[in-house]
Figure 1: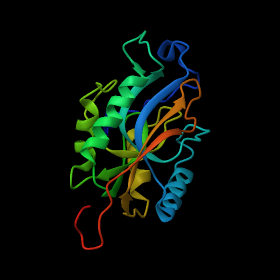
Figure 2 (figure 1 turned 180 degrees about the vertical axis):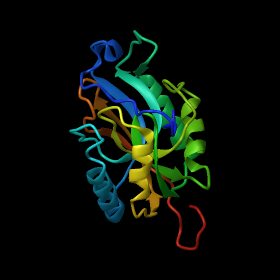
Figure 3 (figure 1 turned 90 degrees about the vertical axis):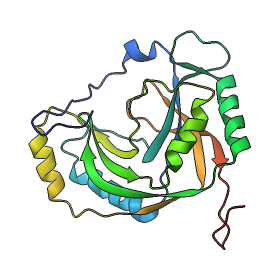
Figure 4 (figure 1 turned 120 degrees about the vertical axis):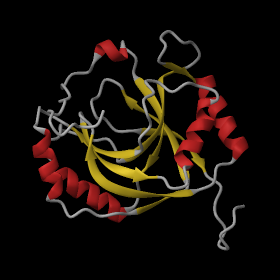
Length: 216
């Protein structure tokens, strides 16, 4: 999963992966979209600095994936990775009943999976994990690996020596930002468009924090 210091990056091939989507159009997930202006400027600057390594174009918004649902279908499952509308309604009901609070995250260091460059996310209050547990009550996550919150900067376009990536990271003046999360997004992307944009279908507003520090 993580890039080993003695290995090569795993490039993403530029085709639409029909063996994965099987003609299905919309892939669904819960996510946190990034709106912090200074953080967005920092992320855009990083993608520019590493542009020689990363696959282009990339029109997907910067975000933190929260829970991967699968291919969105109206009412009938055909494959194991389909996600029908009733499952979304169940997830939404559970979240609404439990009223998750708004929370804060902190960006960490630049790091790398074997296939992608990313920014680490620190979740000191385990807010993401708690929400993921609520989502799991009605639907098992697709291709669930060990959850590691992050913001993807880009997928690798070619095989690159890991040491070259890590040396490039060392030259960066890295910054840290606090992210205030007051809503969760449920949305889709076009499965046949590589690194295509996310489209929000629903936003869940989180329970706001009062000015005295308590919760409503």
